[in-house]
Image (cartoon, rainbow, N blue to C red; front, side, top):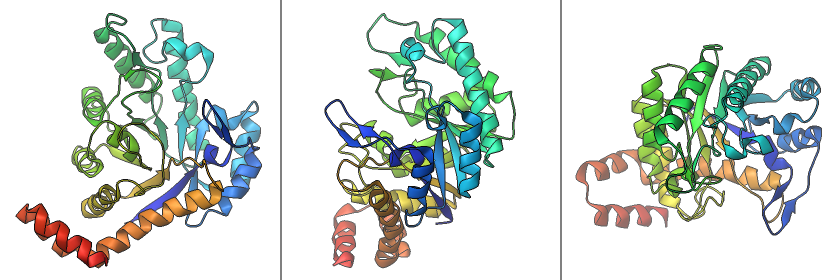
Length: 320
């Protein structure tokens, strides 16, 4: 694969759920030092505003001084209290304007940090109950907001990440189909999709198919790797649950000729985050080596024949 590997900088810091704190808070400089120890890492993904702290300019200098490349600025418009009722789809037009301004700021920061990409997962936009929102208005507001931000500058790509739920019971961008619909409706070449493998699994999608679909549409901008049991977004090591999905996803990335950044949204509930992300990158790289061992021509043959019984028998045998 002609790709580069990125570390989500926040995953070097505090990680917790409702019950336990698994990793402590760390300063940005310490997190960057940890990234340097991640085997195979080519750069970082940094969240705005969270990872920048109270002094954005100082944080920009710290990132620049680290010498690490930046794959994307990840815009968070969900955690702040004011977003509780929505960001791009808030019923309050002032809050919708705030969301647009934050996206413009993230775009400017991306350029300052040497990248042409921001990614955003609008998790707070959607609904929880029937008769809670006006779906038509929400879609109009979302389209208007993304279009307004995109008009700010066309040298930065806006990559929209979808997720079925959390924190909304039903997120407005819940799957690849709706996200591509938004992209096509806007018709802007610099608005595309972040395909998170775990989010695809959660939506009962096949990640490899989503890679193929988004690439065919010319909208596959960015990829997050992780894994889960298709019932919750556990952010596990790639391939630790769905090994064949990982192999097929890597196969279709290679087959399509797609080039770009792979980023790793993998939690560390046990052990060391540096080791966890190093292993994540290694697992994706080893997936490519397993494809070598099986043989890509053989895989193309299996696809053409469409007979799973002999295909899986031979694929498993080739791994022994």
